[in-house]
Length: 252
Image (cartoon, rainbow, N blue to C red; front, side, top):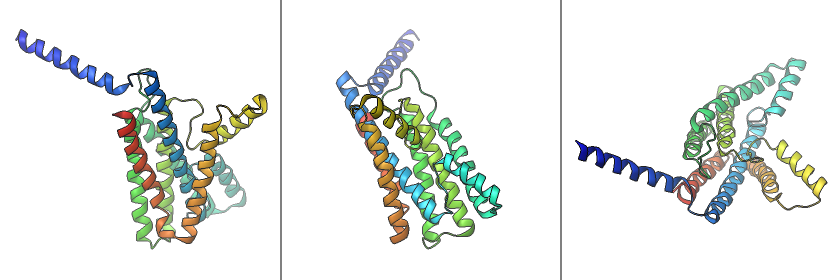
């Protein structure tokens, strides 16, 4: 009995050591390299945000899937004008985003002091987002790449749900100024920093995030208008790459 207990204790200690070694890099230089990779992946996720918002605005009812401030203004305008269709689309987008935010918080969890640069629950949340975008693609293609009516509403709801998951899951990183959906704050901070310091040092990440949002929107709009069947492929490809790089470059 004592031997078995001793064996279990040794095995448990070994597992803890392996987990600790996996959770954190061995040196500050390694952690810095991982942080750079993490920031690059966040920029890639911002491409997803821009592309999805552009597709939604051009093809799914003239609303956004991540810009909830804008959607709430559009919701008020729809109420003021008595436009039921606009009210349905904006209300659906906001409600779906909120549900996605709750789901993302449950999957990714809250930041912890012992978190590595990329907590594995974040990859699980992005995996859920990827699955939703895969379903969006199937629905898009089933409609002949021209969703309308109920299909259009379902595509909009699913897209906003997916970005809600992404938005709250990224909070697990607990990095100030790092967001892939709330970028008005990023723009404000960037301009304030440039105004007060007159230096670009330290602003590179913010500039890249904002540029990625614009680039993603350009790509999404171009595909939605010129090559509709390709429009839903963008988030799928990027999310697959992000999860793969995170797992093999940071987590392992």
